[in-house]
Image (cartoon, rainbow, N blue to C red; front, side, top):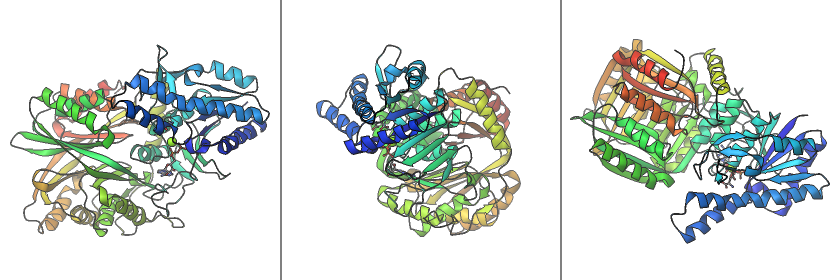
Length: 598
Ligand code: ADP
Ligand code: ASP
Ligand code: MG
């Protein structure tokens, strides 16, 4: 008999009427002949209330006790839900994570699932009961209660769907489905009928709060068919699938992390191993850093900047201090008045000019861009917090993502250059091979490391820090049909902007001509380039949030004595640039670090 998992979020079980409605939905599925597992979140704002209550008592609650406290919210909802099902004349049993056998590691408040027992759930399902499971929680091997991180009930649901080989995992929530951006922020946002795992994973990781990003990791790794649906109507919602049929549009979603913080560690020695120390210190505290920029060093001194969610800032500063102590020199600066805006779309793999388009859209809206990082399906920019809403709206409109529009970029730098290749299929197969060998459900999946020796690096430093600079530069390059790959931008010392990017080596000379023409306007800017570089790309699932991937990667490169000059991180791809002479060596050492066959 087919199993269906239905997850209900907090607002969808906020009061008795909504609980009854959710119960009716499960009962209807049961009466259609399915075995039904419900995963339920804490009611309404319950988890927030519990967090505030703890804060009234202490500002440093022990994480173990936080888990003990927070897990009660879900226990309240599952019992009420079971009563609601009973009242409808069906059998039901409510179970905590521990009673099901959701085994996690011991990282309280942010635990990862190791395995899930199915016997007890199956026994109840086979006896005809609806099984109602507390989302967001498990127990470690010493029976301590753990929680999976805020929003973690989505992850419980996809994990249960995986082990029960469910036909579908339905996520019932308070909106119609997944939108092109947060519909509460941008009312003209469009509901998507489909979105790919990769896009949803990247969007969830950069602020699309509709799904917990780790739940998409599960769905992608174990090929769980996932549907996000409204709890208040019978609309079909959004299907999250291996590949979406909206691939023709270059951007499918825009996301915002409003409360981001920026950290710069300056005055550190310019030698291999600096990134390794920083990533290791962050990984120890499970802080996923983003927009990582290593600035061109001057006088043997380097500067590294990155962003973190503002809530992680205090912990990040402790980690940064520990990194400085280890490195023997350095100073930390941080700022909080910033937000991160990201555009995501698998179409970026097959189109050029998307970055130029995005920078031009922001320039037209007179919004200054502080930092930039790109990956193969994502562009993220850091902006002042007071222009964050305008930036989201501008990017959303600029790519034509509003309701009733066919998504087409408005400015016109975007050009299609290729069809989606066999690469994606090959990649999917490699991933499935790695997944089949996992011992723990949430273990790291790194499926491939590739080496590209056909690119060059261009760096322009000392540009003015004002709206429109990146736009002018990349528009010129896009006009010349030069395909830009990795881009990083930072505003460094003296409030001047530095931009680095890579281009195909055969286009380097053409690109330099185009750039020099634009630079006439900014005589202080310095142009430099490296004709022969090696770019290494590590592919996998959940790379940024599994902070251990960065740690392993930079440790391995450091141990091989290899210096990294540029890097980009995302959930599905991490790329670094090293000198061409060290390309092969770096390739081999990363293969070894991630246990891949060459
Ligand atoms: P639940 O309690 O059901 O888990 P969440 O609050 O976690 O619900 O997620 C739903 C919310 O996510 C919506 O109310 C919406 O404001 C927000 N959201 C952010 N980005 C998006 C998006 N791209 N599409 C849909 N909803 C989004
Ligand atoms: N109740 C938890 C939270 O509010 C888990 C969830 O709702 O997914 O974060
Ligand atoms: Mg949620």
